[in-house]
Image (cartoon, rainbow over the protein chains, first blue to last red):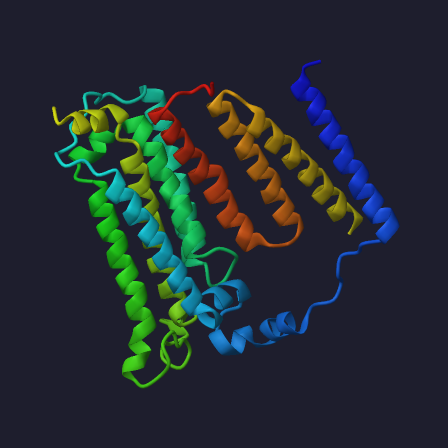
Length: 247
Length: 82
């Protein structure tokens, strides 16, 4: 038996023993009652935000400013990564042929399915679990599938570059900021929801600003992570050529 | 209630094993797969604790995006840890 497996066995047995001892000696029990703060959200979310989904309501309404700043932090991280991995001249890759026809067809079907689910998660974010961030990150997985299967070059030839995707993210972020600031023009607080935005559009529940936030966050996250996938998939040789000043 | 606790316990134990394997693995691509396994265990754990919102984000980010990004990064360096 190798040393690695032996250590693993010891760790597993020790953690099992510790948890059993703690459970038997201290009698730790999971709480069965809801705290007062939780009760407030359960009782009042539907009146305050017109959304039956308390989590989305907390993320984009009660604690809306926090989420806007979090989105900005992620944006800065992606822009920072882009700044490090930018190549001054146009990227021209030798490999144009991706994977085989079977993989391409399978990827096409899978990408369509993932995109459908991502849109469903986002557009129903104010009704069911989910929202802009999960939907956007599910959507970004399509980019990570397309890059190895269809090659980076085929994407670049269609005009999909990481700079443009980051610009798209910037636009989506601006839209989020506008949704947050628009109520100020009417003399209301920033990130106001129900006093400014309608709860229904054409008879469909959109829960005021929550739907807009979810949708723009979806665009921002999807384009941001797709940009990361694109600039990380530029081969290392190109950077070495760039450092040497040749090419 | 007892079923939930057992599911949580098994998921935690499995995640511990996956973490150990991921840390000690010399082949980085295999380490990514172990790390994704740990993420799946955590997703099961979060679902057992009734947090579907977190499960959705966690699955998409830690199993999909994170693993794919690390594979891209490994393609820029060497596959085996010396």
